[in-house]
Amino acid sequence: GAPSLVACKYGASHVVATDFEHGTLQRMDQNAKRNGCPDLEISFLDWVHLPEQDEDNDYHAANIVMASDVIYGVANVTAFVRTIDYYLAEEGTFYFATRNGRQSVDKFLARMPQSGFVEEERIPCVNDVDVVRWRGDHTIYVFRRRRR
Image (cartoon, rainbow, N blue to C red; front, side, top):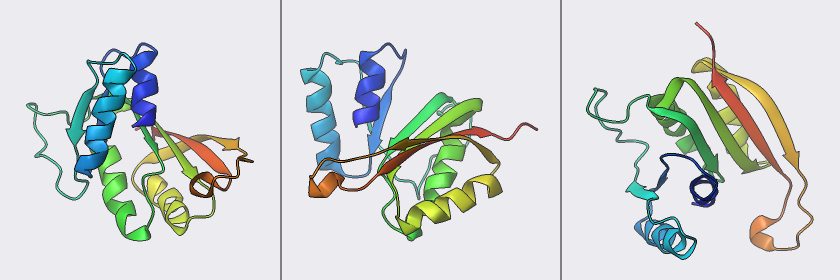
């Protein structure tokens, strides 16, 4: 939601906001309209059931993929990494923001190199806001595909 809205507002040529929860998709649509992004494409995405890989879909089409606080349990990591691999273009960049200390993050960081990605940068984000939902420091991870 939020990364897609920022990308849309600040000039990305084509932005697709995705989620698995229909309620979240409805809120994304409302926020896009409220913030002057009527062309933001809102789409349901199931990491486990990706479309077939062919020229008629978005396989390897995205130059940039962004995600924020999307993996909460280790069970979803493999499907999440497979989804990044599916959508990210060969020369694309993946940005991932998440709260530090989650078990899923450690598994994710181990899985990315196994799937052909190189971590290029870690951007620390200290959070001193006393809001339970946002409590804890975050990191933004930047990945690219390993050059072949």
